Length: 390
Ligand code: PMP
Ligand code: GLN
Image (tube, rainbow, N blue to C red; front, side, top):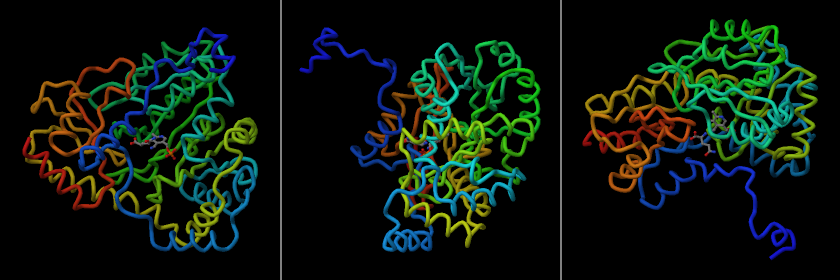
């Protein structure tokens, strides 16, 4: 026993007393233990493009194995600047406005630590991705959680206006939204801009599913909004775009002042991020820009396949507008709560899914689960076969 723990009466005060192991880890382990098809945690069961794998080997063998620059290699930051200029018509400065991070998780954490202080309030919308609130808590601030409006998960403008006060420092938005697949539209960004115009409020925009937007609708980035881009951190993830979630490579785009503060945190959280992966992605982006722009149709086909397969089932659903997640209402099948239902589904039926309750502070008690469809068609077919029998 250390002197320190003795001193505290043997009791370690948790800084995150309400936090357990993430639902994604819990469900993937349950799926592995049960030998179930894993449609829970969001990761593809197919590999990255062959050329990208070759480029990784090339740069690994080519000596790109020492610390890259703290903000990321210039070649990759330049490619990102070119991409966001072409997609979002935003002039990001590769030198002082783009930072490569170890996953979007790190970028989100760094942005919060950079600008949020004790006594501040941060507004997030439920259902919310699970890493937001702990980052705010560790910054010593309070999270204000506002429910999105059912059934289509829209922002509740009245509640948002009522929640904003002199302590509000940051609003975190996520479009396309994990877990519900909802999108923010240009009108939403205009309304948000009007609400915070006269206030000292920043935005953190989680856009990791930027290329998973369906039915001919384009992704609306905060970067394409001249007013909001000036007060936003926009976060994107290579893990999603290149089917490589395990590489943990992402980036944050923000103006020079916000980026300077962001990097003060980044340099002491990870300092920098895996070198040869950065070189490989930079080269891949230069030679295959179509990979990203073809992703919506690639994933829309998967969404449509899953929805078509589930048509005869007793699940009720509206096809996801974005992300690679599909929500399913199972109230015609079971009265179990969602935690019990996914456990039964995984252990007894052999399909793992994610319950929605962990994305809420106060879950609405609806019987909804999330299925991940970034899977081979054969996996989707096997899962649907089981789900249609319930
Ligand atoms: N934000 C959202 C909404 C996500 O779904 C995820 C990941 N799965 C992340 C952030 C984290 O991304 P990364 O794996 O790049 O850390
Ligand atoms: N974002 C992924 C999901 O929603 C999981 C990421 C993680 O496991 N941390 O499934």
